[in-house]
Length: 209
Image (cartoon, rainbow, N blue to C red; front, side, top):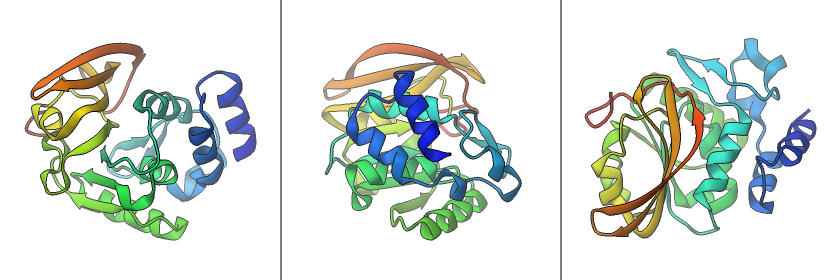
C-alpha cells in the first residue's frame, strides 16, 4: 500500500525529487497513526490523532517538503511535531541529527516520541511554543511549519539563516490558509511566494492564534 501511495504522489506531481520520493518510500506511515486508523494509513487524506490534532494528507506533506528544497546535512526545525511522521520524513532527507521538532502538547509529544522510537528514528524533540521557534538550536537552514499561522512569526525569521527558507500555511482565518514559502534575504527580511490553498489546524502560541 505504501508503494501504491508513493506511485500516486509521483504520478500526480506532488513528489518531484528523488530525495522526497525515497523518504516517502522509507517511512512507515502506519506507525504514526492510531490503531483505529491503520486501514487508512496509506490513504491520501488527513487523519485524526490525539488531542484534536491531525496527521496531514501525504500529498500536502509532499508539496511542503518539495517547497522546502531540502538537502542532506541541512539543519531543520519542524514546528508542530504531531504524530512525528513529518519529523521522520525530514530525518530521511537531511539526517536524523539535523532535525529538531517542537510540540506544545506534552502528551502528543510523548505519542510522537514513542512512534519515532518504534520506527527507528532518533530526532531531537522539544516541548514548547513553536511560534517562538527553538532558540537553543538556532539558526536553521529550513523551518517547516505544519499548523496554520496568522502570519510568519518573527521568531522564525530571526532563527533562519540568511538564504534559508520557511515553509508555512498562513491565513487570517483558522482552518483556511495559503502555503507560503519565505526566503530570508537579509537580517529581518524575507521574500515570500504564495502557493496552494490549504487547511491546517490552527497554530496556538504567542505569535500564533
